[in-house]
Amino acid sequence: MIELKNIDKDFITGDKEINHVLKNLSLTINDGDFITLIGSNGSGKSTLLNTIAGFLKPTRGEVIFDDIDVTKLKDYQRAGLIGRVFQDPNFGTIGDISIEENLAIALRRGEKRTLRWALKKENLKRYQEHLSSLNLGLEGRMKEKMSSLSGGQRQAVTLLMATLKKPKLLLLDEHTAALDPKTSIKILQLTDTLIKENSLTALMITHNLKDALKYGNRLIMLQEGRIIADFSKEEKEHLSVEDLYKKFDEDLNIESAKQ
Picture (tube, rainbow, N blue to C red):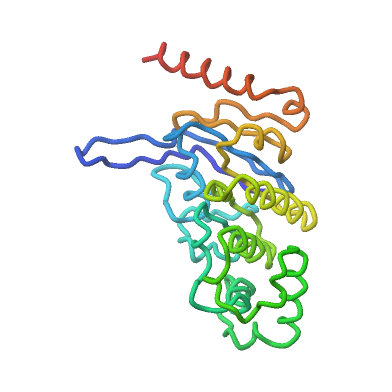
């Protein structure tokens, strides 16, 4: 179980004013949850993921992993707990080394072992089997540089890297936004398969409301730094895209009335 307790995140603007991005946000992520996260621009979605990952330290509040307070731990200190895939396919991989070397780095995430260990024959066979499951023909290209791959191929390998060593939490930060529609569909299907086959816990930001309804067992709506809705799988099945738009409008009207 992962818990966010009363999280605030403030930033100081160029005019030295305080921008309250996350506001007393509390969230429990249960083992096995696949949560889709939606919200308008500036609602705090990426700030939330960066706070969970340790890239940002909350101004107030706690981040708890399995009853252990990790609030003060840096991102590299949480590396063994978290897998992450970014919007840009070039993030999360190293372009000028081979595919197998990138996978070797992923296998030793959170450890201090050398690449030599991760490039042993038995591990290379493992990488080949995983790449074969992607159905992209990459199992025969393991010695090629990562930079030789297309955006979709690279994102597929990045996703594989993030799940190769089962993380406590998989963070997906709009990881299909930079891809063409056809490739985006394929990467989302691959994402869903990897999460289900490995019984992963995942949190996925998406701007596509249809995808938010289609994937996962929970849907969370974020607005102005607060969670305004947390729908279960059963509730999602009775929602439409129009319902989600209506919910956003209603909440904005409520916030405006409070000001």
